[in-house]
Image (cartoon, rainbow, N blue to C red):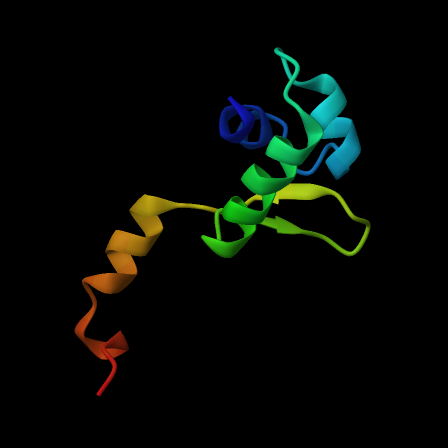
Length: 73
């Protein structure tokens, strides 16, 4: 639910605004754990203004992983 909301509203809300606008209320400590997981798994990023942006793009990742010139040697 949190992932879907952030993906649909990428770059619109700050962390607390995302929490307040979720369709169902989530406890704030649980919400913090979800946000930390999404940050560590590089699915979201926080811009210089503190707004949360969705950055996960599996199609782009697959395309780059398939390129021989980008392999680690």
